[in-house]
Image (cartoon, helix red, strand yellow):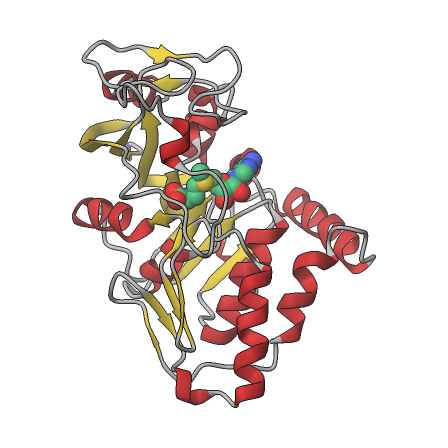
Length: 319
Ligand SMILES: C[S@@+](CC[C@H](N)C(=O)[O-])C[C@H]1O[C@@H](n2cnc3c(N)ncnc32)[C@H](O)[C@@H]1O
């Protein structure tokens, strides 16, 4: 069965045409595509005998499974995928300490997740698939990752090439394609995406259209503190990040979700960001959270805006 057969209501023609275009573009080996395709291909022959997705560190393969030669190849491929934003991973004994302690986000979301067993799930902006591997432990039928960037797409394909999880897939799709999957998903994860979109309510409406009736959305977003239903709209950058549009309070996010047609909207967690959670490591050697925040006043970003919090919400697509 092709995985797209799981989506009987989707606009398959449009999805397939887009994916074919991407595949052709990759096959032409255009400059830029090789940088991450070649590391992926260099270790394609390697499979892991043992994986563990049940705890904070996603573990794929043991150190003693590989010859010295293959271990060197894996190490080189992993270094080629730097900077590693999401993790931690342990890959054939190689510890990859990523910029983000992603297990913290996952552990906050976990108690509020609906049943994933046997479900069709989307992870939008899945990056290298850290959360998809954590989901795999909960036995979904399919997790489809949407990730338009080649670096992350090939990092995921490399990791899953080792791990061999047939129910985890990633495509070079963006959140802008979610509407094509009409009534397709039981659960959609939208984490770290919403503040990068110039029309957040429109995105939420499209996401609702891609959920089955009764389906569940889990949202995690950067936000600002405050009780009023407001969103900050930065002039250029927010915490040095370009492409940031609306940064909501929790009350504002709640209103967005309700007005996009979701029911049972629940803000279930929020917390201030910190450099314990997002920091420079050996696997991400550039600026990180501490560099984005006013040294004299950690309640402000370097631009003088309120420093970010992270907000978690769950919402239902009405039956
Ligand atoms: C801030 S990260 C969040 C990653 C992960 N979901 C998390 O919560 O830790 C944003 C991710 O979205 C991806 N991305 C960028 N543009 C996108 C788009 N148009 N649609 C979906 N994802 C996108 C980025 O490459 C990156 O992996």
